[in-house]
Image 1 (spheres, protein in one colour):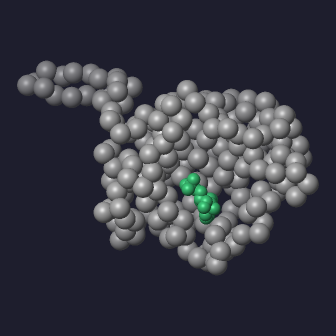
Image 2 (cartoon, helix red, strand yellow):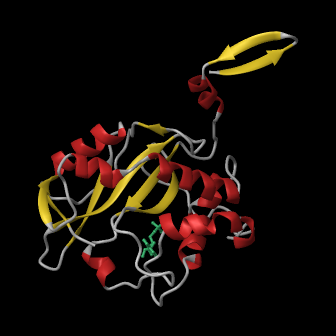
Amino acid sequence: MKTYDFAMVKILVPVSYLSVLCVSQDFDFFYFVQQWPGDTKKKSCCYPKSGKPAADFGVHGLWPNFNNGSYPSDCDPNNPYDQSQILDLIGCMEEEWPTFSCPSNNGTKFWAHEWNKHGTCSKSVLDQHDYFQATLNLKKKVDLLQALQTAGIEPNGTFYKLDNIGEAIKNGIGYTPGITCNGDASGHSQLHEIYFCVDTCGSNFIECSLFPNGRCSSEVEFPSF
Ligand code: AMP
């Protein structure tokens, strides 16, 4: 509950109502996307200059989306990625938003891609610093690996039922995830990315009305990293 003073009259506003004030004309919701670093495709990639990332989910991005399934992209070429605006966040981004592109680099290329393609489409509500800060705040709110491990789902190459993975995440985090998969070297389905939906402020998780096409089989491998 937040307290506001209007002409000496105290008005109590439940915090949940405040989020209603955040409206965007430009998109309907965000996907907040995290990726597991152990999938086969990543094994042919490069670690960032800072070294092998933690064996944990990392951020892929925060993507404005429309309710019809389409999404805006590259909305403002006049507002390109500018690292000088987020210098205070870089240390945290190196930990939470690791790059796997080659040649090995510090992440700038990946973060610039995410801002230029997706972030510029959220600029009616989030400027560049707000966008990266909001994404890091969302990451801090959810511990996906913990949610899975609590349900006995470990990253050790075991196959788990897709339904059980979804249920473990829903139980641990409180929201139904979108789950996407890759194929491993033998064509088996393996865990790739986890999607949550977020309101247009970029601050509150919401239930998704629309999920990505996950391409997962009913049994999914959780590879080690
Ligand atoms: P997007 O365009 O935001 O949908 O992201 C897809 C692009 O991001 C592809 O070019 C991927 O190769 C690249 N990508 C995804 N994850 C990573 C990562 N961890 N590091 C570097 N590039 C990535």
